[in-house]
Length: 320
Image 1 (tube, helix red, strand yellow):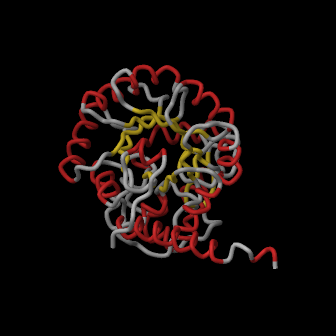
Image 2: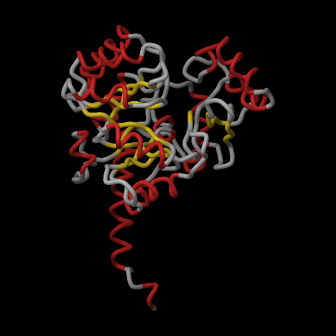
């Protein structure tokens, strides 16, 4: 099923049919996944965290072999090779660079001088102000209910998006707790012009994670996650034996453990459910099945439109 596209500043910026951005997930959001999202009308993103320039070039080439639709590249700015990876993406003609986990000020001019756009992830109004002042083209406002690395301020998406949209004249993409059309519509009503989804895309046939991760998502409740590393780099994950053990560790010890075992802990490479770190948002409680990426995006758009029509038809109910 194909539904009519949207038209707003986020669509114009990204060049996508719908203002639905794939949340970058380390070792998960690679070329194949990005292509699937873009082909379905969203905006795919390749997560470059953990990749070197050559590896990124391979993923970009893979995505381009699967779609002619635009997609972007995300790089956390704290990574030692951030500049190298950004330069590689720009050299390959990537039109949207998605930065996170750092100050975009030092990269904005470099990116824009090559004709590319910059979107930056923020978790507070203060961060959004700084990003806007640095000249980014849009911000992704990530609430604390999101999966993966979240902000230390623990502000929810509902409050964060509204605080930014009423303060700054910059396109906002809402992130955290969104996995269906109701979430999409709610974000638009708050003033966002797009949404980012990550957890919902894990439970798709195209997502390259073990079956146990998808099964765990489909059986999870909204209370099935916990936040690790609250004092350093908070990360929301599904609660399992590994996560519960890590939660009992001091932040310093947790950092040592994560550094020592590295990417082997992450679900794409882990072999067992109880020994894996599975980044996941609270929206897992709303995921009830594994679908194709296109089905997820089409259903979000269709449901949002139907809900909007329903609200319009009953807009006078509170006056009764």
